Image (spheres, one colour):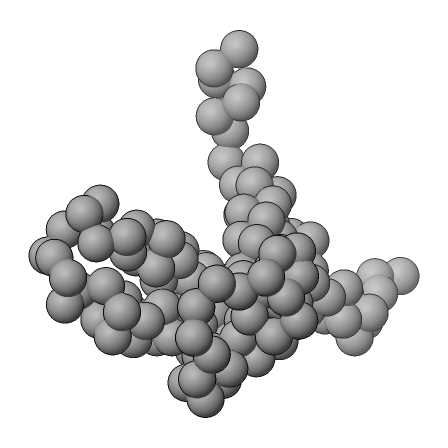
Length: 136
């Protein structure tokens, strides 16, 4: 059973699922800041937080559908690194103690997606398959 599940043929699909779930979850971080959905944002709103929220909404959506994936993931990785050092690292070195675990995980997850691409299920893949000439 393990050999069947460990096959590399599933990797592009699992990468797509990872990108879709991460993008969708990140999207809701932004909607919470901007639209108070699915819950109200509990912190003081500033222009920096508002811009981050816009980036989370737009970037999260683009990641979830797999459009311009690599550049978007790279920018969002930088956003999360910036968020970590601005909001968390000053409190304590360890992410588990300063509340910065989500920022660190998103940062490296997005960096990984920027490096490997969107996976098999994406708007980019759909557009590429339509643009390529079909075999006779």
